Length: 217
Image (cartoon, rainbow, N blue to C red; front, side):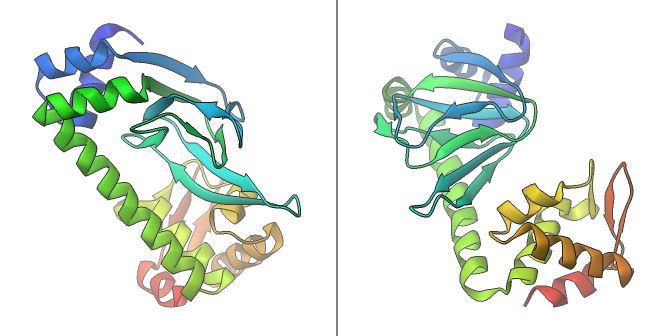
């Protein structure tokens, strides 16, 4: 990733002017990760945090029974890792798709946030938004059925355009909805059979958004 590309990305993510973006860029290292590449393992010590420029990052843990459970998924403009101090990773961090990241030393980024209002404000907004998403996920786990969590995840992935391209892999959909692959596959098949969604090799389209929303609860 060229310097000019990084500056554009930093300005968009941190909502700052060019001077501040260049100051931030001096502390950031571009990192390209391939699909399924492990960025950090559960229990590792880390002094870094990452911002996603492009791609998708999955955070999951292995329980005492060896079962894998997804905690979160991060996309463009989102932050993960250690901040504001070095920490021990509570979960495994892995690239779900081909991804471009910007890596920063946690304490250096925290110092910049303390000294520069634009950076501090941007970090507050990023972290507040991710807290809101985490709370949504907790609500889904405690109040929705397994199929309802699959439905909710499809709505989230599709966004206002009501389409997901390329279509979600069933295994990844199941993990993100905290359910089994079989349950996710059955839920998706039922939606297709009822004409609520249409799936092709290129994309998944939600044909009846209101009906899908009604099935979540």
